[in-house]
Each structure stands twice: as structure tokens, then as C-alpha cells.
Amino acid sequence: MALSRRTLLGLAAGVPASAALAACGSSGPGKSGGATYWYLNGQPQEGVRASAVAAFNKAHPKEQIKDTTYQNDAYKTKIKTAIGAGRAPTVIWGWGGGTLRTYVEAGQVEDLTPWFEEHSEIKKGLFPSSFGAATVDGKIYAMPCETVQPIILYYNRKVFEQVGVKPPQSWDDIMALVPRFNAKGIAPFALGGQSRWTNMMWLEFLFDRIGGSEVFQAIAEGEKNAWSNPAAITALTKVQELVKARGFVKGFSSITADSNADQALLYTGRAAMMLHGAWSYGIQQADGKDFVSSGGLGYMTFPPVEGGKGDPSDTVGNPAQYLSISSKAGAEQKKTAKDFFAKGVLQDAEVQKWIDNGSVPIRLGTERLLAASKSADFLKFTYDIASKAKVFAQSWDQALSPTAAETLLDNIVKLFQLSISPQQFAGNLNAVTAK
Image 1 (cartoon, rainbow, N blue to C red):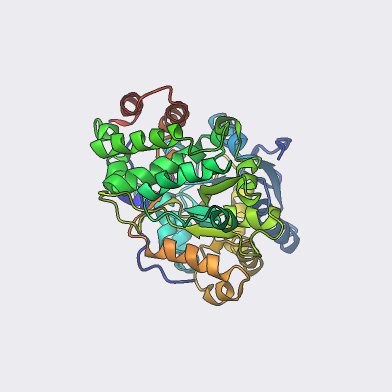
Image 2: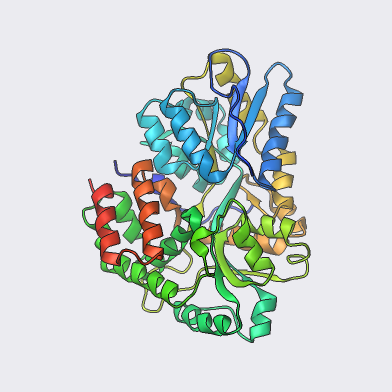
């Protein structure tokens, strides 16, 4: 089913400033006992989520939440299976968009529209752009939470100085930098290609920069042969040209993003650049010793492509993260979850922790906190991207249905491994996204 433009795109212009797999245990919903909540592990984000739960449990001894954590890729499989079996946790962490739509159509999540009408002050306190991916057919089925996460082009300033080059201002500049870094034994780009969605970020920007946001919008709306748009074929061709030019680190297909191995390549100087989410800043800060504090980390928006129609202000990524409530949970569990949304999510302590980790919370009115942070420059940069983008498109694997997203990710791997052509890629995707 096609997504509405509101569901797919967060129109952010004018927004005010402001791992091992854990055991599942008894985390299914049931009809009695405390509420349950599954979310992603990995620091520093896991620590913020866990602290919010602990603070709520302490303040509400009669309303307890049991939390369980999973690695990113494992979580996607686990939550899909649990929901399909009617054994979802009370609180379902996710990315909204196409996946949320499938939950709604299957009757697996609560309609939160009446709750938001009753708690209008909560809705008014969040980025307006965060509600697009929480909305299905005009109704709200998820609580936007956490942070805004555009995709950013990071680079190692010291490596650039060492090679004597400047950050790319165009796609041609990117292609010209590739042989310069390879000649010095430095990978032009780090990439955790085994995780698949990391490769996807390249296509998201190339589609946009070459053809504009309407190229993927047509795909999301189920238009016939939308993947065969000439701009899409050009983008697919360009990413293969980058692979053939040895633009990515050797062996990228066996590197996982969950392990943060791609991040390490950048802060150790073995790679010059990396396309990744805004959350990467906190990882670089936590794991890279003095890499960030010494000014070694550079960042910029994805550059334009010569002759492209896209608006350079457009961005992609996660307008927020989202919490839904399982329709199979018991009445007391649902009440606990809603109380957590009202009194446990994006409270002052959590907001400060996100900022300390180099993230921009989606709660309005945080301008002073952002400016006072040691990461103020990066936070302003991230905020400006999110608030000034004419189009903030949701990550493709979340905007599309889970079935289409899985086909997309599988074919992206084949595209990057040069085992299928751009035309074959387009044909395979047309078959699963067209109405």
C-alpha cells in the first residue's frame, strides 16, 4: 500500500530551534504483570534509554517496566516475529513509516490519537516533523521520541591534511579524491556493508541529488516502473562506479555496523570519510579517545551532483524514533506505557543525556542546552540540517513495507558487489513496490 506524502516525508522547514543478543526471557506481553519494553543496545544510546526506564520505575513503584535490549539487525527480526505471533512487548521501539503501517493494518498497535488529543501539550512540545512517520491515514500510532538523526558525511581532518586535499564539494570531487587516498594506502570511505542499510544511505542521497525528492516519492507511492526513472538508473550507475574505483574499504561486505568497526576505521585514520547517521558523533566521541575533542572529526552535508535536480538542503535519515503500544497488552500494561510516554520519555535528565552524547533531542525549547554543550558546533549543524531541510525523507527501509524493504536491502548488497546491473536492480524492485 502506498504511503502518503505526510507519512514518508517530514517537511521540516521552519521548525523552531530547540553487543550480544540479550535473552528474551518473559518479555512477551501477557495480560498481567509489569509492562515490557524492547529497544536497541549499543552505547551511548543504550545507556540513555536504560536510564529513562530506571528513572520511571523509581518514581512509579506501582508501575514497573521490564526492558530487554537487542542489536540492530537482530532486533528487526525478533520484533517482527514477536508481533506476528501476538507476543510483542508492551512498548514497541521502532522507526515508524512503512513498518508501522503494517502493524496498524494487522491491528497490532494502539491508536494513540485520542491520547494525544488529551495530552496536546506533549504533542506541542515535540518537533512537528517528527509526527509524519508516526501517522497512518491521519491517525497517530506512535510516540515520537529520542533524537533527530539526519545522515551526515563525516571525514578525518588529519587524514585530509596529511594527503593535502580538501573536503568534497561535489560528486566529481568525491571521485577525484578516491585515487588520492588509495595512493596513500588509506581507504576513501569506511563502510559496514554487511549490515546492508549502511550501503542504502548512498543511494538515498544520490537519488535525491540527481533527480530530486520526487524520485523516491514516486516509488513509495507505488508508481509503476518508478525505480526505472532515468535519474534512478544514473544514481545506481554512479554508486557502482564508486565501487569499481575502490572507493570503499577493502572487504566492506564483511564489516558490520553493529560492531562499530566502520566507525573505528575513520577515527584511526584507516579511512578518510564515512557516510553515517548523526548518532555516529556520539560513538566517535566515546570510542575515539581524543579524536573528537582534538578537532579531528569533520562533518558536512552530502554534496550536490553536477547537473542534478535535487535541492542541496534535502536530507534523509530518521526524523525521530518511535514508541508504539501493543494492542495485545493488558489494560494495566497499556496504562503503564502511556504514563511512561507522559512522564518518562524526554524528561529533563534524558534530554540532557542525549545532548551530552552529541545528539539533538526532538523536544522543543532546548536551544540554551544545545548552545551550552561541549558539542555545540555539531549540535547546531545537526539542528540546522533538520530544521532547514525542505524535505527530510525517512530512511527507505523504514518508509517501505517490511517485505519491500527486505528485497531492497538484498538487492543493494548485490548492487554493491557488482553482481547485478542497475537495470536488473530496478526491475527487481519495481516488482515489489508497484501497486
